[in-house]
Image 1 (cartoon, rainbow, N blue to C red):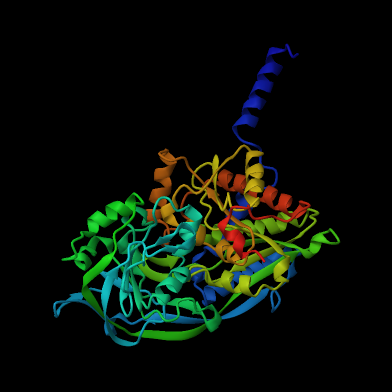
Image 2: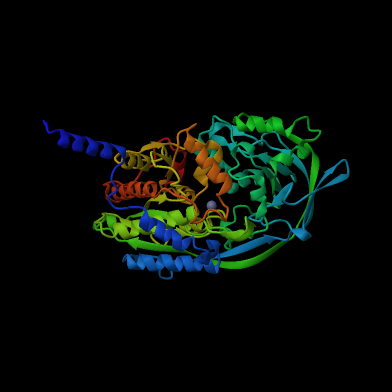
Length: 530
Ligand SMILES: [Zn+2]
């Protein structure tokens, strides 16, 4: 027992410090920030897929990986080249209108709605009746079918983004993946989809959504990947102007939006209008690469298995100016993830791990998770040897890290490993508490999931109703996919460092565990495991 008052005081202070925040062992946030300063610099022109700026950022990444002594595992050194097709709407030669009792009401592109050129739109004029199909979901596992009883043949479906509250978050997100949804509508004979964002879950306001609508969108060139083939019309409609679609139908849009906000079931019914659309699209071939590096494991058997750490390196490029700035630097989205992967590569290189680690920087995430889709379908190592994907995308260290949101927490025992890593550093974990945001399908881990690989994505969380919730909401409204997601914004370097500590611990534990990660017996996604 210590009796000296000064020593006691010192011990007490030490205990307080230890309790307040674990002392970071490997990271201080500074190297992380230095990498971000490079990849989010204006010289990188916002790293659009296929751009010179992205090539420069990837050259920097390759230089860093080489410096860390990692091995190239692309198909051309560190690179895995892919071919893309880029499509850009020419709005001055395009138009949309509603037809009601033979009377045409012209709509304004950009104000009322805009075309989605991720779809290979029908060239020429097309006219078809509209049908409101609720959330546009068919979930056989839950006996749920928004299309049941509707005649959709030759028609355009109007859907409101969302899902009923009794469908689990990850499952609801999965069936809202554009390709999954289109399978169902195509089978019903639908020729197109008008999507109305759910006003309760719009990350960014309509004005900003619409602002860059003429920016090129893309698909992989190989038809094997064309999940939206056959869709002739694709429009996103401003919810604030959606009432005009429902006139005379016996339903008000506001009534539907109120139901969707509360995740209640939606009515489904034919609308009294048809859409006439004319889309002119310019197409162009493009090339872009993934970057892949390996840290070989030390165990004679397990070194043939790979734990993937992935982050998308592309962003939105140069677009319409906001406050005079037209470079969409993507410092958090996803310079932050790229920087983390580089930090992990440098740090783990000094560690003896049983399994190998694959560091994967994917392109074209912002175009629909295309780089990871390609990599997951054509990995540069034996597909069966990939045991897990841990993906980092915009983990947002803009508040202190006390709670970690783990997407995929309940799907596999990777969730348990993440929980142990976080708790050992004094951080709580929470599942995804915002089902309407569909986070589980919104980053690259989803493509690994679809290939049966247990996957996770973690970001800094907040408790519902806390002041932090407002900080995150404001960040999305003002900075997400805006030029101000740049290196002038304030970030919490100690939160970033702590997140990196957790990530490192998780990677080490998965790489060294006797057994590879397993899906939970009740996970829906287990079906994809081979
Ligand atoms: Zn993004």
